[in-house]
Length: 226
Picture 1 (cartoon, rainbow, N blue to C red):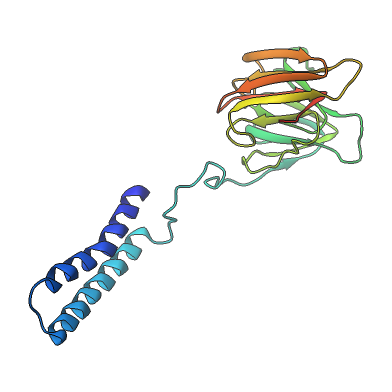
Picture 2: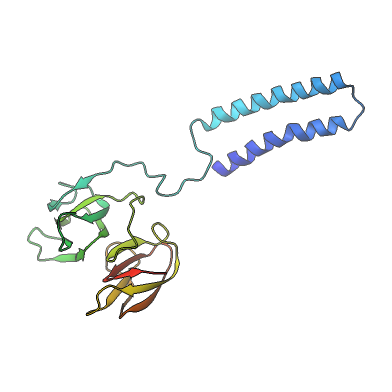
């Protein structure tokens, strides 16, 4: 719809100029040309006003998913929550507490006693995770905020998760291990439930990874250098 509006705007901008040029090719006096120009200008102004009325406050440029986000940003600190009761279901961006240097983790289970685990993930910088209605979520030493796809990730630091196409373009990347003893590793997921693994690999010193739009990349004990 917005592309059609752009095309219409271009059309009404160019049309008066084309018509005026065609009239100018015929034999017309200066006063006649001036009158014709003023007439076309008046029509242009009317069309432009109608266009503004049609689109209202809409932006003509296409919006990215991040710009189009309209929901409320919710925030939850460390603790245990029942999704649908204590917290809203959805995708969350988790960041570790700045005053805690040992990393954080999130546990998601089907029961309150956490006997039926769905997944448990540890992280040092950030994590992108989905919580569904009826699940029990325990957040330890971190804050979970509604994921709006505008959150920054420091790619110069190690231990992070990114969405490809949002934080990082699709392509091939060179990795450097930041743990000289154990090396680094990466995991690529197709979603943020950590159950559909696309690829997993470890590397000593230097490694490479190739990612596509829509995938989620977690790098542990490593960072991107190229």
